[in-house]
Image (cartoon, rainbow, N blue to C red; front, side, top):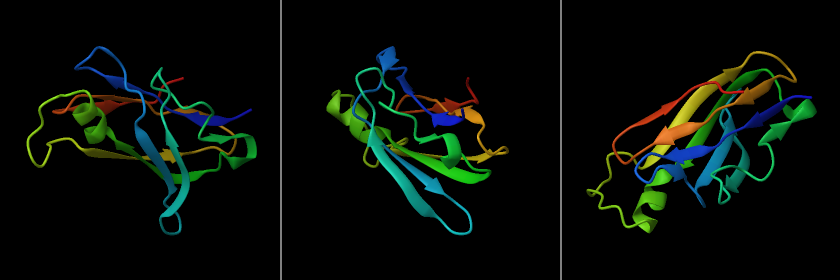
Length: 116
């Protein structure tokens, strides 16, 4: 069965980023908010963002609100922060596929990849 999942790693503290707001949008035919969730203590969501028949071919955007995470940890940030809200646009090429889109971040950089 297919699923879309994510997690966030905080490279400043060397571990998961808990309580981060994540939004998932379908981008076709125009942006539509599908899911709003916060990460758990392990930097993951408690359930997949999409699963089974909801995993549909198309373009999507994950929006990670990491600036508030770093502020809550007492990390000194400039105003405005260099990295605050991170949008990641990606495609799902197959209905019912399995996709994992993690975020690895600090207040100065971020990266992603297609995980398993």
